[in-house]
Image (cartoon, rainbow, N blue to C red):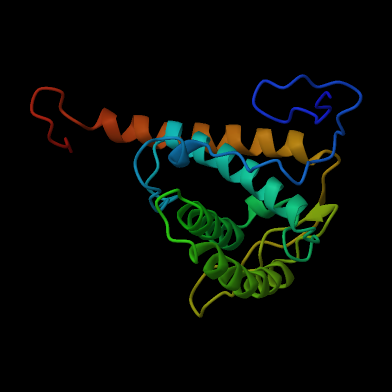
Length: 200
């Protein structure tokens, strides 16, 4: 008697018999902070170096893609251009961290149930953020900002149509990483190499 069970393990051969769709047994990628042997830690997007920023963007993007496929989430919960909206980035990043902690091997058995309970609350917040931002399945626009008295008027908000989400995401990350690298370079340019102190 032979075992004809397909091999879904690491290094398994892929051919036409293996579907392109995500398999229910596929696990989400454990990348970036999750790859190291230390416990998952919060991601403060404001304090990441350029290298860390790139790694976290790629890790979060892979996890969000796994999440939307696994749970069949519509664009009203996770739109394709979520990365343009800080409110969605921070919310999804927190959910990702919560997931990493809940499914950590050292965690107790009830943690995944707690994650799913919190995931239900998060989906409601995501719907609110998406509705407020105005981002859609095939187009995006900056989140409208309320101008307080004395502030300059906000620029006009116009929809931008994107033909290829993945290509746009790569370009977005490259620009964001370059911007962060420039800020780092400018900061270190004011550091005295001999004393380590900030120069005027």
